[in-house]
Length: 196
Image (cartoon, rainbow, N blue to C red; front, side, top):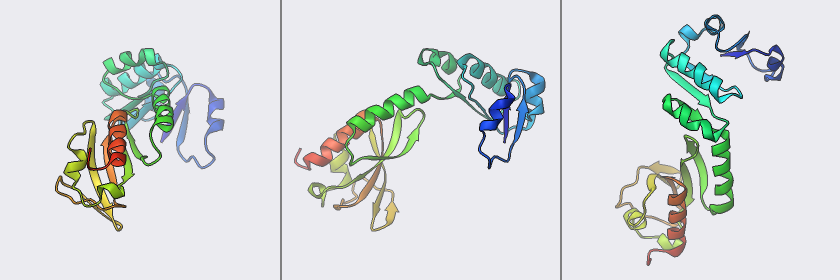
């Protein structure tokens, strides 16, 4: 791992366990990028405080140096369309953070996030099957739902890929892939029971 920064003092904030290399210099400089090993790099993360600089470095890495995996940080939500126009993988702490705050305040505690994709638009949640769904099928539970897909069912410590015919038991742990709307609908369904 190589970290590039034009401010040498920034390297003082690295974890004492960091065992990679540091390169001082401007991230847009061809010489600096090549000194950092971009010609052999398997991935690059452009995470400066400037969305414009991040876009330029990431685009250069992909187009000129053919780096296979490139990700860029987005600070200003109004500049996100510019980054998307380059076809870059984007991580936005602002968008992700705002969505996570909304979910923490709105999503019931019964649903626990176990994986987040993109900026959190789609997540994998773990939910417990309630008593009022014991003996019903997964198909019955999911029939009216959209924006929510079953991923795995764990019972007595063993996981399986469920089908619509899978019989549910109270206490089963179900992993579902869903957006914010989908997990809310699933929670309401679990609470209401099979009669709805």
